[in-house]
Image (cartoon, rainbow, N blue to C red; front, side, top):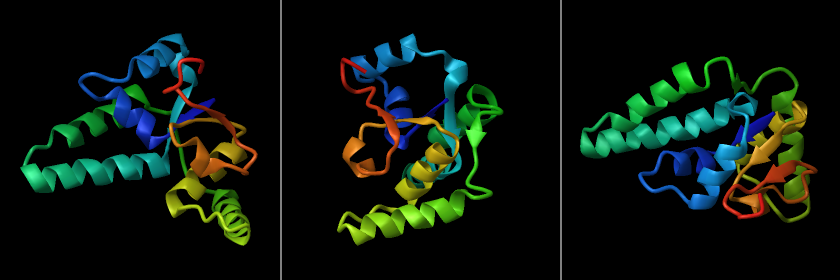
Length: 141
């Protein structure tokens, strides 16, 4: 199971995505790729901001398609023991002087609870969390 971070989802929807990301997606079994609740929230926030700013709902429609078609049944939620784990991660990182955002703590906790790999460009944001991480933006990923 590979959970896609917001930056990977956003890159894939660009008119001219990074060639390394395109190649990385080409090599994946698409049924192994998942979204998670916090990433859907971040995507929704961006889509709604764009709608409010421009009046165009194209990103809202794209997100609806992503959720209902492309990732139907493959969205991991922030439930059960995951919220407590996220709180622990935030406290641990704060204690070592490396605070982590709410969203990143939620995403990391979901990945850890499900033994999933996180696909992200922002590798440093997740340092020290014992996460399996892949960076699709790197040619070697």
